[in-house]
Every structure is written in C-alpha cells, then in structure tokens.
Figure 1 (cartoon, rainbow, N blue to C red):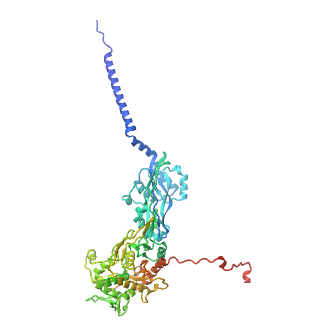
Figure 2: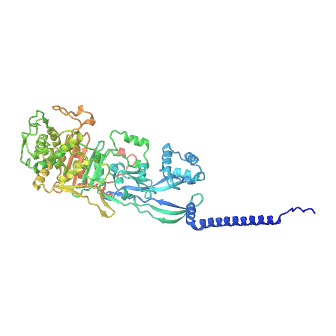
Length: 635
C-alpha cells in the first residue's frame, strides 16, 4: 500500500503558535513596562518639572519696579520727583508675527526709525515673556487709538509707570544730573535682577552718585494669565522697597539767585558753609533742561546742545579749570607769614615791575607805575599788587608754595558727592619733570605767585580754599547731601591748620575785609548798602598771553579770548556762615563783574528773600470814583 502523504504537521504548527504567543506576550509585557515606566517618570519622577513648565504657561513671575527716591532742598522744596508716564510695550511670545505687528502699530501710532531700532536692541537682551518698550511717552490720544484696535495687535500693551521729572529744569541741571534709559554697556555691569522692573538708571550728577540709594529694591508678583497672555489674577505679591528720599544742603532760592546772576554769561558760582562743608549753591551757566534726557533725547535737541559754542552740557563748577589769578594772593600772603618770609609790617618796593636777580626780564604789575613806593601785605592784598607777590613767591619758592597750596585742597579733587570732578593743578618740580620732561625755572614760580602759569583750579576748589580761610584752617570735603530720611550726613574733616597762629589769620582776614570796605580795595564797589562785613578778593585771569611791554586792549581781543573775572568772599567776616567763589568767563574785571554776583548770593543767603509789601486794606486803598457818561467833560 502506498504510503499516505501527510498534508498537515499539527505538532509543528502548535510549536510555532506557542512561540509566537510567547513572543507577543513578552513584547506586550515589555511595552507595558516601558509605558508604565514612562508614566511613572512623567507622573512621579518628573512631576515637579512638568508642573513648573505647565505653570509657566499659566503663571508668570513679573518684576515690580521700586519707586525712585525723591530729592529735596534744605527747605523741603522738591527738586526731583516721579510722575506717571505711559509706555507702549510688546511681548514677543504673544505676537504671531512681529513684523506685521509693528506695521499695524505704525498705522495706528507713527513710529520713528529710532523707536524701532532701539526696540530691536532691547528685544535681543530681554527675558522670556518680558514686556519690551517700543515707544515712550504715549499720549492719551494714542492710548485711545490703541484701545479701539486692540483686537488687531495681541501682545501689545500700555504700561503705566513713574518716570523722573525735574520741576526746576535747568536750574539744578549740573548738580542733580539726570536719569536715562539703561544702555547696553550698563546692562553688563548692573544687577539684572534688581533692575528687571525698570528701564532707567542715574547717568550723571547726584542721580548717578547716589544711584544705589535712590533706586531701591525690586519687588515681584506671580500672576495667572489665559492663553492670550492676559492677566486674570495675582497669586502672590512681594512689594518693592522704595528708594531713599534725600535732602540736600542746597538752598533753592540762593541757587536761583546765583543762576540769575550769571544770566547771558558763561561761568560758575559755588557757595558753601565753611562750618559744615555743606554746599549752599552750585551753578554752572549756561544750563540745559535735564527732562529732555529722561526718556531719550531727540537727535535734534541733542545736536543743538552739543553744537552750542557756549557748551551748556559742560559742568564748569566741577570740570572747568581756570587760573585762580589774584584770588590766590591771600593764601600766599598767609604762607609768607607762616614761614617767616614776611611780617604784616614788611614793605616791598613797587616800581610797577619785578625782575629776578641777574635777569633783565621785567614781570609787570597790572597797574602801570605800581601802587606806591613801597607796599606792605595788607596793601598788596587790598590793591592786588602783583609786584609784592612776585617777590614773595620768589622768596618762598615753588616747594613751599606747592606744599602750602595743597593744604587748601588745591591740586586734588575735593571729594564732593558728585561725578566727573577734575583735580585742577598745583604745580611742583616733580610734576614738571614727569609731565613736561623739564626742570622747574624761577620764572615759573613768579607766575604761580599771582595764580597764573601752570596753576589751575576749579570754581569748587576755590570755594573750598576760601572756606578754609573763613574757618581758619579747617579743610572739609564739600557735601551736597544733608540727610537721608531722618539721618544727618556730616562732611568729613580732611585737615586742620593748627600750626598757623591766630595773629596771621587775623592779618589775612583784615586785609580781605579791606578789599571790600577799604577806600582803595579792588572790591570797594560792593560795600554800598552792606549790612554785614564781607571779606573778599578779586582776580583777573589771562586767557591769552600778552607780550612783555604791551598793554591789554579789550577791543583788540576776540570776546572769547578776554580775561576771566574771578571773585572769592566769605561773610560775615567775624563769624563766617558762607564762602563763595565766582568765575565768569571773559568777564575781564573781577571786582566789578564777578564781585556783584558774589554779593547777590551772600545777600540771598544771609538776608533771605526780600519781603513783599502787604496789600493795602480796602478801606485805605483810596476812594472809589464812579464815572458816568459825560462825566469827563464835566471834570
């Protein structure tokens, strides 16, 4: 019988089936384990991570800018305040197309190229979901236009904030400085967290010097928003710490009088209290409106200031370096007395010129023919005799002049609480060798004797030096800041001339009094109507050199090359309360040009505001006459 062929292998098929089922079960189990493991990772291990990411879509951490501290004068007058301002901002993450959004905004509110350029720069250094300013100082009309078209520009908001404002405008421009928008350079050096809520920072002046104090500490809030980014509610809030309010030593009325005294002139006036070092007034003219810089000055306005030949942006009080001229003579006279080179009775011949031994060159006095056959120290100060101080400087020598001058704060920064102060120059042998690569010559000492040559001083340094004379030897660092809140600030005492005798101080003070009150004083025109004793000294500083033997001719010299007018003073002479230094560029005459400005400042501080006459009562104002038609003809 033929062997039947097997058509189906049941055993084999069962084995294959079991293998497949087993593999399938294993695969399902592995996949299940993977899925369970992944679910476990998502729900347990990475729960906090994904919860945080989820909350970020719903909850945001927003910074809250602190209120910047206010600045007051000594009488409580507000000098720097914060006022509401509206800013157009954009949150990139909530915008579908940034370019389209900018185009739509430009249709609603015109945007300048500068607005867009600065916006893109700020956009590159922002944090996620941070609102970036596009346009500052948005008007109420523009806000209304945006409100009507709000559906067209999602992610665009109007941000209300406080911005700096200076009610006194240019009156305190160089003293207070201003705040401005944070630049790219400043971003790299500031604390990004503390400045995350603001776009402003102090740029110059007091605003910059006390930036940390005035700025405060940023706060924050957690807010919940919807899918369109609109805030639904505040979940948590931590209020910012406001900046400290500060009070200055400055008297706004005296500051105004000083500024008006320089009307249509270029120069500076600094007034300080010799007993405390407090700055009473500090003016540089011309000034400028600091409010222009707060939200970004326009190119037109900035170019107008930058190209102005009178340099309104230049702080002459701290940065202007001028020859002190004859205002230095009381200090050199005191040096002569202290070192025993002269006595108050010492008389020096004054033919109108001075020559060094074995030198034919003549150093001429400003007064042709001199001030008499001989002059003593008081006469030399009162009449500003150059010849006397030529000889005195020669006998003292540059080494003692330099050493003594530095005791008045000359040749170094005063340490005032402000920015960009310059040091002036109190020359010495070492300075000449290092800076000019040459030796010191006796003729250069002669020039220093009358405050000329290499010697330079800022108006602030002259005020400090005058304060040292007024306080009889106390050198204090000048201070604008009087108090922070209720806490008073004391100016540090930098030095005290305890080695100088009272008799020598008396001699110098008496001679400076005679400058104003004496019959031959260079400031005698100031004594009319004085109700207090003023001690002063005039000075006239050369701007361009004049050949030996030639006479100064104002009409032959360009107006900006004419001599500078200087005047220093303190009062009352017996108990000084104020020391003043005045520099008027190209004013020519210290006593008659700079002197009256100093007198006005002293009157304002010592005498106060002039009292206004009281209005007459109605019953004493005179009879009331009623005129009817035809009455004119009858009268």
